[in-house]
Length: 82
Image (tube, rainbow, N blue to C red; front, side, top):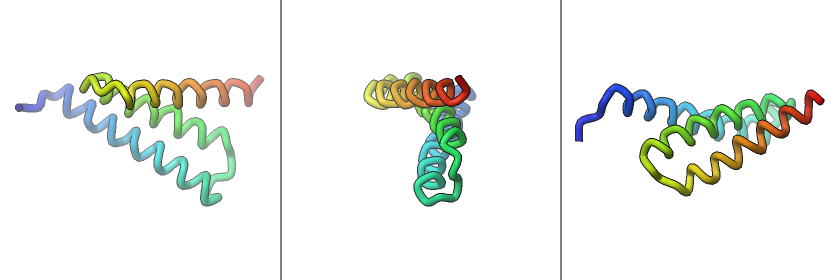
């Protein structure tokens, strides 16, 4: 199957999202970053990236889990600033 420009772009967004989620968690867990808000920002944008490619490919399990992760991260960020 030939990849379109949109599917290639979504693949890249998905990989960047994956790197943000894993990198953010790893950096926070090891103390490289100590600010929880930065961790939640990584998680928010990472989850949205994985959500985009999962929705495009119609793989619903990652859609559900990354929707929850993105929502939780957004709530944490908002609560931090209120």
